[in-house]
Amino acid sequence: MLTNGLQMDTAGSWVIKTSREVRYEIVETTGLLAPENPELGRLHDGQESKGKRLVVLDHAVDRLFGEQIRTYFTANDIAVDYLTLPAGDEHKTLAQVELIARRLNEIGTYRVGTPPIGIGGGVLQDVVGMAASLYRRGIPYIRVPTTLLSQIDGGVAAKTGVNHDGFRNRLGTYAPPPRTLIDRRLIATLPERQVRSGLGEALKMALIKDPVLFEVIERYGKSLVAERLQDSSPETSVDQPGRIVTHRAIAGMAEELENNLWETELRRIVDYGHTFSPIIEMRALPELLHGEAVAMDCVFSAVLAANRGMLSDDELGRVVSATCGIGLAPSHPMFCDADLLHQALTDSVRHRNSDQHLTLMNGIGSTIFVNDLTYSEIKRAAAQMSDLLDVQPDCLTAQASDEAHVEVPRARDASDASVGNPDASGATSSASTK
Ligand SMILES: NC(=O)c1ccc[n+]([C@@H]2O[C@H](COP(=O)([O-])OP(=O)(O)OC[C@H]3O[C@@H](n4cnc5c(N)ncnc54)[C@H](O)[C@@H]3O)[C@@H](O)[C@H]2O)c1
Ligand SMILES: [Zn+2]
Image (cartoon, rainbow, N blue to C red; front, side, top):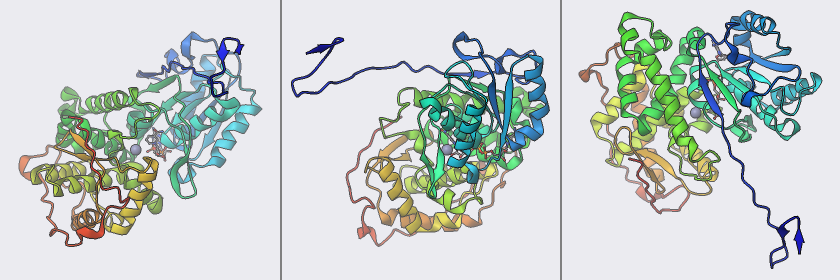
């Protein structure tokens, strides 16, 4: 039987097949808040604004840039209303999403012509994005990330989300905004600790696929933090490590996402640093920032790789030194707790549909996936993480020297290798991304 061309198959069901092209842009600009810069007010696809738009700010952004932002919209005669929200992962909740949805409704947001604008860090972007993706089953929104982490990571990605029941991003959607605006100058006001946290994600990208980025981080770690990636000193203005780090990290992320935006392929090298850290980050909240926990996971995973002979002692030392060089601690007591790490892996295995799909480095800038990590390997690496508790961040000078790298103590071979695989799958699958 034919109904508008849709034919019932022989089993007696209708199959609806459709596809939608997804295109979103990440626009780099400077002077984003200058009234003469059209980017902030511009709609996607050349659309005209039809009514009032909601501008959602995080508290710090409102305090630092609120006046400039209000001047911008007034000067450009763009009708907007404002909502200011707290940042920090403890505020990444469904309640914040509901609050945004309520305000979108109150101001009469249209289906397409009045996309809300989120100006703030990764937490604000995740809640604004989730609210927009749920409001009227999905409206476009504009993303203006203002932390390093959100500019190079979440600002490139398609995901929104909130923490729920003690789990990171347990509720969320895939909903990339049509436009993301990046102005590196906006991160000049970040507290140093937030810069360090953002560099944790850049380090992850370097370790999995970009040895050039790794060398820049290794060499300029300390000045990147001190100058908040603004390339402001004579030393950095020529080589521009700040520009290189943001560009290469964004490009690396975009490249990885383009072919796997909806994560139908569960083996994702960008999950490096995100296997063991999610539960630890939530347990430690608010002690550990996202990038801080990610960097520790990167080091832990590097120790696992070194114990398998996939990283040399020298390479492992460089990973730890680079981590310290950007002012991040390589370890934490929770990363020495084998049972907690095992529990974190078990949750990641569920997320990856019952496989470990664990990304391990196979040299700096290269990875393989493994599915056979055992509890004894976790235990052995956790013991080595105890030794790293004494290694302090900031242990390098601005110009890292060859002799400055840190020796990572080798733990004795674990004698309890029979404890077995946390998910008991045992099989090894490796996909070289070299
Ligand atoms: N959606 C994704 O794909 C994705 C990817 C990576 C990270 N994330 C999420 O991002 C979150 C972390 O983001 P974050 O590190 O930006 O944290 P955050 O949003 O909490 O911001 C960190 C702090 O910086 C302040 N701040 C923001 N901009 C500032 C500025 N220009 N100057 C001074 N202070 C400023 C904020 O008020 C906050 O206090 C986590 O929840 C993480 O899960 C999401
Ligand atoms: Zn992350």
